[in-house]
Length: 441
Ligand SMILES: Nc1ncnc2c1ncn2[C@@H]1O[C@H](COP(=O)(O)OP(=O)(O)OP(=O)(O)O)[C@@H](O)[C@H]1O
Image 1 (cartoon, rainbow, N blue to C red):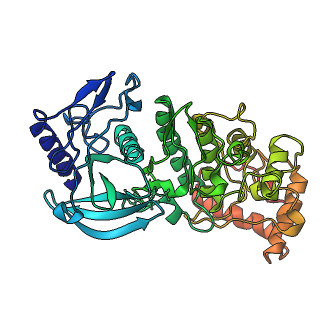
Image 2 (cartoon, rainbow, N blue to C red; image 1 turned 30 degrees about the horizontal axis):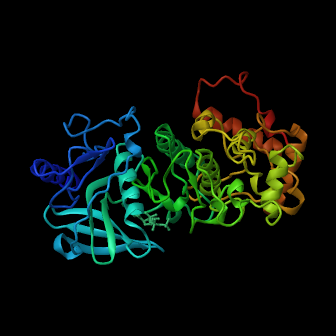
């Protein structure tokens, strides 16, 4: 409710300032001198994004599929000088990085909770700030992109813009040491591929996809949103590597560049980072420290497998199903020509992803292969398993024994107990239909 008030309040001020707006059109590019402040917001070009506003509301604006490239025109917005205390009570510092402070605040005039991203003015240029704010604001319509408000200003030390608050923080603080359950990972993957697909449809590349840049709105992950558009770039432009990001997220073609070498910004770099993020949320860790096959053996092993130089599944991927491995190969291929589009993952939503899981808890426990089992994953799922039934049974026994569960089983007793149980479950159960062969190990 508060956030809607904040949006409406921004609109009211926008409209009351429309007449005094000093927008001009230079070389077909709109230049606005109307400051985007909480007391004097935007020109007609800017609207309050409708991401969390009801579709019936008149202020809801659908994502503009055909914006004619307008999204790439970044206006020189004047930022009025003020202090935080003029309108905001700072309640908490949510995060503090190299470049920015993320502040949870109460906006006093509307009594609304908002998050202010305050970027150190000394460490960034006003153009870079305007670009981040502009892209975040223009993409806010998407359901899985963080909403930015039409509110931006500067203090003595910071350039600042306002955005909605994600109550459960970022994905990094939600995944735990063993990763998330497959169901949650599928939900997250679907939402993020939609958000990034939307950006790519606008010829924009995010370039800094990582678990820290995905915000959580519901504890069951049914609502997550992409944030941090500081590195977002128009497709095809020549760029330098993104500084201050984890090397595990940097695609191999960028790691291979020499210092200060520029390269063409392409959506396939988001595809790579999506593959890394997918692995990260399924296991709790990135698959390797850097995609450098000379220095990082974990990456070298994956690369050999991905390039079909070996059929041996890399050890750290053995818990995954053949279908998910196929998907990983497409996102994490070294060959940029072969790398898939961001939405590829949607083809794998109906498949099983993880095969060696025994627990279904949120922070699922994984069966790590014992030293004897290092050659291949223990495929418990017979349909997709690549081993014969007998091999599977042997491996299963070995695994149970490694967990101290190797007590001999009286098959007769087991069969009798199952029959007893089935007859109490369903009186109409047809014993001819089901066989208990699977239990005869
Ligand atoms: N709207 C928000 N609600 C809740 N937490 C947020 C919000 N925005 C950012 N954060 C938190 O602040 C962290 C940093 O935010 P963001 O990535 O935008 O800043 P940054 O300075 O660009 O970070 P970096 O440069 O390290 O990538 C996020 O990882 C998240 O934990």
